[in-house]
Image 1 (cartoon, rainbow, N blue to C red):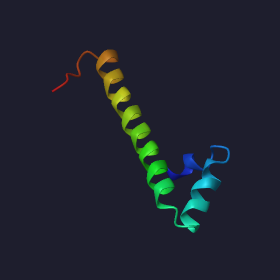
Image 2: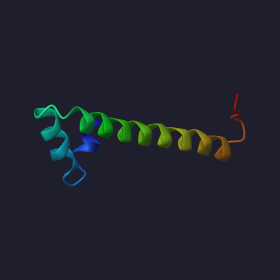
Image 3: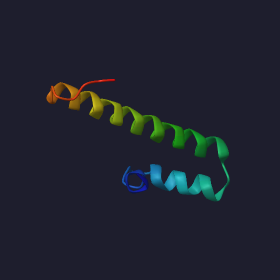
Length: 59
């Protein structure tokens, strides 16, 4: 996941600068946004598997 952070224009540099300056609110906020996005994509992938392959059942 760390590789994708640095491909966003300016956001990777902002994250590194926040770490160097110990800007904890920015570090926590950025980490939460990335985590929520990762969980959301994982959930959508699991739902897509159920829709695409009827042999997979939820639960």
